[in-house]
Length: 366
Image 1 (cartoon, rainbow, N blue to C red):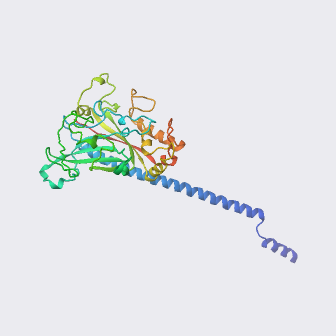
Image 2: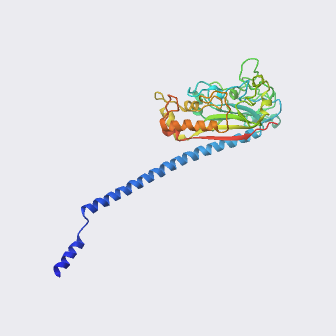
Image 3: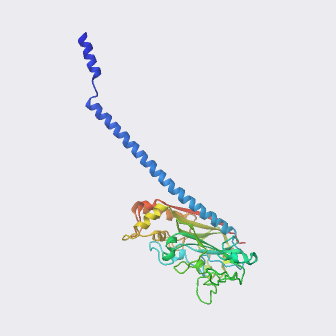
C-alpha cells in the first residue's frame, strides 16, 4: 500500500513532457503571430483612415468655397467669362493627352469669372468705400510653375480673389499703377495677345499658368489638390466640355458669346484629385530617379473630360465616367507602379493616398 502511494505521488510531482512543452510553445507563438498580424492590420487601416480624413477635409473646404463663388457669379447678359468653350479658351484641360505627362501649361483646367463675393485688395485701405466695387475677379488653377517663389505652390490648387475698384481707379498693385477696369465685353478674359485683348496684362494671371503669371491675390486653397477638371450638365440632360450641346449638328457654326452659352447650363461639375501630405512627399522624393514622374506627371495621366484615353472626342459621355477612369488609373498605379500604357513610374504606396471627388454646382445664368 505504501509503495502504491509513493508511486502515485511521483506521478503527481512529474513535470510537463517535452511534447507538451513543444505544443505549448507552438500555441504561444501562433497566438503572438496572430496578434501581431491583427495589430498590423489595425495600424494600416487606421493610417489609411487618417489619410482619407485629410483628403476628405480638404475636398470639403475647396468645394464649399467654390459653392459660394459660383452662387454669387455675376450674371448680366453681356458679362465675360474665361471658361472652356469653342472660342478663346477652347482647351480640354488645356489639351494635355493621356500618357504624355505634363507639358508647359498643359494640365488641369482653369476658370475665371466675376462674382459678388468679398475679396482682399492690397491697397484698398488707401481708398474710400465709395471707390470699392461690389465685384471681385475669381479664378481657379493648379499652379504649374516650379521656379523661384512658385516652388512652394507647384502642383497645388490656387484661388484668386481680386477685389476690384470702380473703373478708372488706380489699384497700385505692388506699388505700381495698375487699372483693373470692370468692362463687361466679350473677349475681356481671352488669352490672346495684341489688340484683341486690351486687358491682357491686367488679367494675365487669371487666364495663364506659367512662370510669368503671378499675382499677389492668388492663395493656395487646396495644398494637396493636384488635378482640377470641370465640365457642364446642360438643361437638356447632356454632359459636355463646351457650354453648348457639342453634339448639335450645327455646333461648328456656334458664335454665341460665352454668357449665351452659359445660359444653357443647368450645373457645372467639378472633379478634383487629392493626395495626402505623406504620399505627395513620397512622389517628390522619387521624382529625381530615372523614369519616375512628379506630382504633375501623375496629374497628366488622369485624362480630360473630352480626350479620354482611346476614345477621342466624338462619343457621348455619361455622368461619373471621368471619375471612374481616374480611379481605374490610380488603382493601376497602386498595383503596378505605373498607369496603363505609360512608362512613367510612381510609388505604389503613394497612389493609395489619393482620392477622387466630384460635386455639381447649380449654374442657372438666367
